[in-house]
Length: 124
Image (cartoon, rainbow, N blue to C red):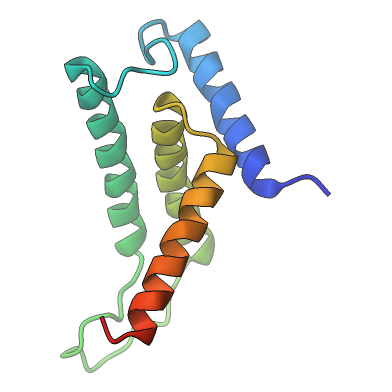
């Protein structure tokens, strides 16, 4: 079975290429130089767009206020998930422009997972 994380990177990378073809100057030449000021500004913009999409997802959560007595039963899971996917697309784009791939992300994820588990065990 194909790695789904790899497929997600491939889909986002092909979208970036399509954007570069159809909308010149939408993405810089890849990978970018992370020490370069314009490249850092581009990364920051991608990250903020992803955060904005996460905020849009959070707007679908209506019952989070502890002081609210009434509960709202209406929840559109598909719209909520769509906003999270939008956020992930920006975060994947951020990784791709920085020259990271699915293997590097997974390795970093595993390293960080070990750190936070060790912290939990040692009372961090």
